[in-house]
Image (cartoon, rainbow, N blue to C red; front, side, top):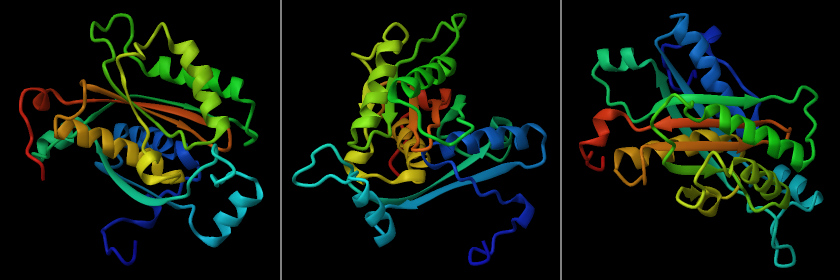
Amino acid sequence: MRLLELPVLPHQVWALASGHCGMAEAIKLAERELSARRLNRIIVLGADSYVDPLSLDWLAQRRRLKTPTRQTGTVPGEAGACVLLESEVSARTRGAMIGGLVEATGLGVRADGKRPPPTTMGRALAEMVKNALPGPQDEQSFEGELLLDLNGEDWKAQVWGYAQVLLAEYLDLGRLRVVLPCESLGEIGAASGPASVCLAVGGFLRMRAPGDDAMSCSISDSGQVAAVRLRRPAALRSHTVARS
């Protein structure tokens, strides 16, 4: 913050240690601060690296790396992603372009920090997604894309597999577009949540998203699961925004 020289007070800076689910926790925090009108805007920054020697050694010792003899491991990556959150009223007042609307956020927290079995996490993730979906009274069904932080490891695939079975009657999984950022970025840890939001909003702005909705699902090593539902603003549904 000192290097950026931004007019941000020290007590208005939060450090979240939630790994892959950090974006969902940051949105919850932002909702609290914005609703109380203590802040007008909140910057969410996610940065992580799995390619430093310490992380690589940790992954290798636990046989979590993808290698020529192990095809279900992860490929380390590193990334940073930044998102600006503010109320819709505030954004419209200052004439800002709104790239996406946060419609719902679900965060399942495990108190002891220990990762439960994939079946338990799958049920928890399915519950988070169902809670984030439009209610029965909403005529607009969920149509768009799912952004998953699957990283090539068996346990994460199993978590999503169990969740997928439980979500079959709530989502048309055959029609939704599934996006796996790790295919391009590798395992980027805490940056995966903000990166998924950026990818979803980029799709809204460039009219590449298959629908007006996006759902980012996160599965953390500590046992947390999260779901964030985004929606394309009405202004973008009828006008194509040029690539910036």
